[in-house]
Structure formats: C-alpha cells, structure tokens
Image (tube, rainbow, N blue to C red):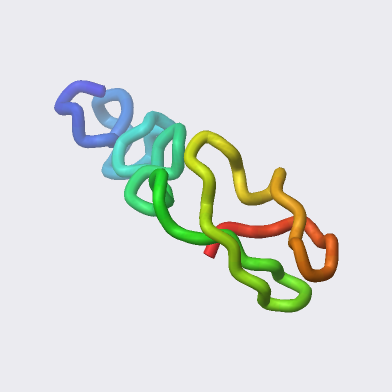
Length: 71
C-alpha cells in the first residue's frame, strides 16, 4: 500500500485493495470481547461468567446442556 491507507496499488482507486486497511483484523478488531464478561446460552438464556482463555462456545450450559455463546 503506497500510503498505508488501505487503497492497494497506486492507480486502483480508494478502498479497492484487498489488504488489511480498515478491516476488523485477525482477532475481531474493536469488536473483540476481551478476557472479562459473560457467556450466555442461546437456547434458555442462562448466563455464566466467561473464563479467560476458554471460548464460550466450548462451555456447556449448566441448565440445558446447549453450547454457550459470548454475551
């Protein structure tokens, strides 16, 4: 990227490069959830604290047994 603004090669126009530019990035960018927070069951709504280093999707709901999701 000639100017580091995500436009790709010179002469290709703004925003046409497939580089990282202003995208979300490898780990979700500004929407990455971080170590705190909670996991929530998409089936019954039960909430549980998020364990750092363990994805919510690997936790099982203590109430109904479904896979948890990040709140």
